[in-house]
Amino acid sequence: MIDPDHELSIVKQAKILTISRSSVYYRPRPVSPRDLELMKAIDRLHLEAPFAGSRMMKKLLAAEGLKAGRRHVRTLMRKMGIEALYRKKNTSRRHPGHKVFPYLLRGRTITEANETWALDITYIPMARGFVYFVGVMDWATRKILSWRLSNTLTADFCVEALEEAIGRYGCPEIVNTDQGSQFTSSDFVECVHRHGIALSMDGKGAWKDNVFIERFWRTLKYEEVYLRAYETVSAARQSISKYLAFYNGRRPHTANDDLTPDAAYFGALPINQAA
Image (cartoon, rainbow, N blue to C red; front, side, top):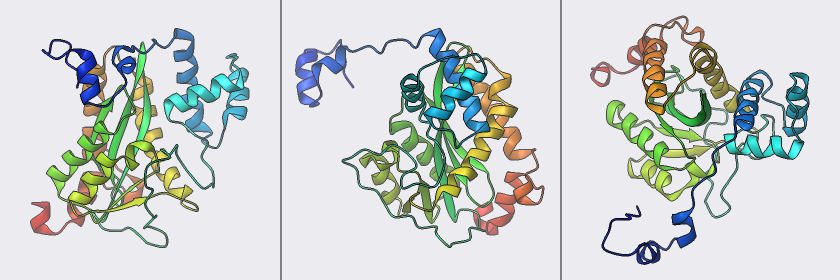
């Protein structure tokens, strides 16, 4: 967005874009090896005990010989986009200025492909750092329709993933997300509505939907991510892509009566749409 080589000065570019000049020069501090170790442990423990908040997480870490203060654990969990999973009003950190949409799936049984898609974000550890993964999943068949990796928690990679899924598979009736700022952003909301899709957001009483998504994160991480030590983002992208081809096309899924997600998805679609 800001071009250092442009004929306009950085000051003028920042003014035109209505952003702070200091933010242009800011360079994020690298995460320390100690914090990366803690974050990897938090990620693993969160899958094992998704109900654990910062207080319990601190104790779980201590039991593994990793000592850290509760405030520091809470800061790392926020950086990772992790929150304790239990019945409560909000399931993710909202942006106070963004509109939140009603939950549309209460009492509804999702059985058809392309009836509802779910989007969510998770943390992916690497050998020396981490990235975020957003996935677009068909609710009924568990097929991963598209995905993206990003080193920042912004809306753009979520929009790109959704646009790719729509381009490849058409539009669902409903897109369901949590209330995170990436999904309440104007760019994401506009993308959903431009395609005539209804936007649903998890709210009070919808905590079980997060459990459903957590099951896929657990599968992805224990069958792929935790077995690797990605040196670069491109290496992570290549390896995860290979695994997801296996997950969609060859791995039987109990929710599909042991059909693969691909077989369940394309078998559930009308013949002309599947073609």
